[in-house]
Image 1 (spheres, rainbow, N blue to C red):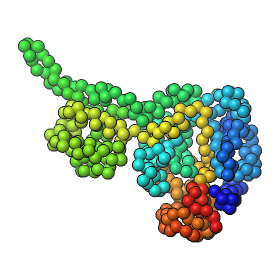
Image 2 (image 1 turned 45 degrees about the vertical axis):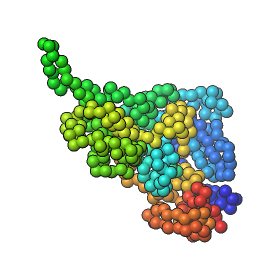
Image 3 (image 1 turned 120 degrees about the horizontal axis):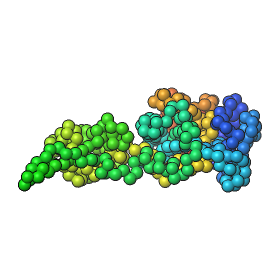
Image 4 (image 1 turned 180 degrees about the vertical axis):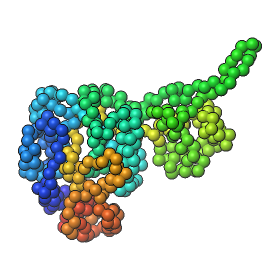
Length: 389
């Protein structure tokens, strides 16, 4: 980034930090803090603060591009090595990011944010609250300011979980190693007699949609997939990783009688192919897949993770890391609610054409010189799509 663009971002961020307070996490005196200055490649970390005004003064002196704090509590948070810090426990953190969703590379920024929010809702409502039973008061939800969402679990019961125990939680949420024999159980539908001996006639039973946990999830997923196949909803099926050749084969094998036996009788053992396909596809449909990427999973497993500081600004967008009301996730619009910078007109040189809706206004911009509101200029400059002229 050129010096003029960097200075523009620093000026906008500085004005925000001078005029707004910073929300600090619980027990902030036991946390490590870290900051990334504009134009720097190395983060300043191993910092701790005893008073709120000390953090504020530090931020006003530096004007950081990114601000972080530790999910862990330490006896000596400013110690220079992790071993010397004295780990006391850590929040359970979930970080869902647009970059790790299948097909996200073909989506616009707006479209991607909508998709990752659906995954986030699934995580919070279906898994953390429903399956794990965490109370709302222990869940803090945040927009990351960039390309995803964070959930902090503050239930004291999770603080002492080690990395392997946290990985088990991730494995459950992404449906790793689900046992086919546990999902599709044998059911005796009748008995018959051979040479005087009663013999059971067994069938594999589909999980009922109203069952708790993964069995019910699989049952609902199978029913939804069958409807998509019948309706020839190819794009909807592709979204869950189902290939066209599988869709064609499934359409041939799913005769009307087989569909009736699956949906009405709950029997799924008509063919091994159908059974295996349904298990894999239903897991893909129900799991929180944006947690399965190589760079997402360690966030939850890491007991010493740095996470973005709420109410700080994201250096690549200028959007605020803001808390979301758990009962109003659907209402939250990151490109409106997280826009906190001004709207004075700024001249930029845009590297390619762009369409985006921010703060309720639709922008259709062509390549070259453009005049846009400050909040949009910061996002475009921060993302490397424009420079200040």
